[in-house]
Each structure stands twice: as structure tokens, then as C-alpha cells.
Length: 348
Image 1 (cartoon, rainbow, N blue to C red):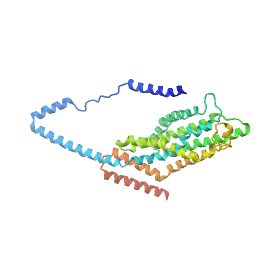
Image 2: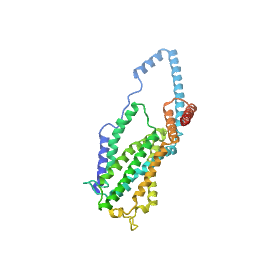
Image 3: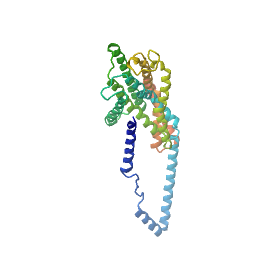
Image 4: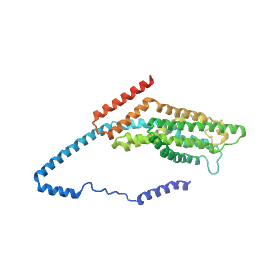
């Protein structure tokens, strides 16, 4: 066990060493001005006093224009500051149902896998690596094939739809765990044997695909909509919604459903197949299935989709559009009005 804990430490040390000694850590930017042109302007200014005064007046006007532009930009940034950390946290909370299902990899999936038959060196803890393999494989396919193809066709998946797709894969993963649980009971009841641990490869692969859509989209939206001075804090709030809040919720959920994790004698010892067969772990999986499906439904609701889209539009306008704050707000109100009108007309 000690050597197992040493492996991540060694890998991290190697990674930091490669970062420090693999290349230069400092970048020296080139000068932003032409020294020769500056010297020529000095000599011309000394020879022509009037021309120098004219140049100074032109330079003053340019400085005034630059200051006005900076004031406009600061007003735009102040409008972006309206997206607070609470809003970012509320955005990230849309994937809490998925992350509740995702948190089961280190808890309920392990409990279920502990009563299954190992396949060579692959046992219940080893099956967690299937999630990493799924993220690497399908992450490459989605990032390098699916998304570029959608961009080529000018198709953009809304952020909430990405959350919904991720939650749907999470629900599919829990559904596979339910099927596996029924298979464990059936085979034990008929033959008194355990089924192969490879049955759990389906939930792990599906939860990995859901992670690509839901978690990566949450990181992206939390970073892009947050103001420049609050991006680190926004990332921290998103991390809490991804890993902290779902785990706390799972603790309360597990304590409320404690009776489902006890054997026929009322003891919480279900790591043997005979004890697991008398427990009701499948009921807990059905509850998780309902939570994951709730996440799908919420993220497909048009009001939720429009709310997230309006926040993303406000952040994009604040960065790209050189307008003052009242004009930005006017345009955003018009877009929201048009979106609401379009939704009403389509409903009629």
C-alpha cells in the first residue's frame, strides 16, 4: 500500500521537473516602438517648432481619444461585473444531479463490484480506470471529430443542452448499474455464483462520456462568464459545485437510505455475496436514476436555457463590443424580448 501511494508522488515530481527544466520560464517581449522613428521625430521637432506644436496637439488628441476608449472599456467591464460568484455557482449547480451519479464511482459502484468475480487482475477498485480510459478515448473523438464537424455545419450546442446530455449519460450509467444489480441477484439465486466484474465496464464508460459533456462545459461557462478579476474565485465556486456539494448531498442521501445497505440481520456488512443478495442496494440505484433524470429535465427547460444564454451573451458583449453600458443593456433587452416572442410564436 505504501508503494501505491508513492506512485502519484513520483509522477507529480517528474511532471514538475519537466515543467521547470524543459524550457524557458520567462518571455522577453519585443519593444513596442521604433527607436529610429522616435529619434527622427525628435530632430524634426527641434528643427520645426510649429510642426512640433502641431504634433503635440495631435498627440494630445490621440491621448484623449485613448482615455475615452479606456473609460468605455471600464464601463463595459463594470457591466460584466454584474455576473457575480453567486450567479456562477447557480450556473454550476445545474450539473449537481450528474455529479451525484458521478460520485457513486468511489462509493456504491465499489460496494457492488466487491461482490463480483475479478477478471484477472481487474477487480472493483481497478475498474475505476475504465472512467479515465473512457474520458481519454471519447474526449478525443468528441473534441477532434464531433465538435469540429458541428462547427463546420454552424451548429452550436447550447450549454444547458450539454449539461442535459451529460446528465443523460449519467442516467444511462446508473441504469446499467441497475441491470447489473438485478443480474447479480438472479445468478446468485439460480446458481449461487458471482458474475464477472466486466459488467461494470458499461457504467464506467457511460459516466466518462457524461463527464466530457457536463463537467467540461461547466468549467468553460464558469470561466467565460466571470469578470476578469473574479475568474479564480469563479473557478473555485465551480469546483465546489462539481465535487463538494454533490458529495455532501450524497452523505445525507446515504444516511437517509441506510436501511437499504443492510443484510438480513440488519448489519451494514454487505461485502459478501450472500449478504449483498439480501440487501436492497438496487433501490438506491433507482433513486439515483430519478435524480439524474431530474437533471436532464431541468436543463432542457426553455426558461433555464434562455437564462444561461442571456448570461453568456452579456459576458460576450462586455468583452467584444465597444459600447457603453446603457447600449449593451438595451441590446440585451431587445434580444431577450425577441427570444421570448419567438418562443411564444413557435408555441402557438
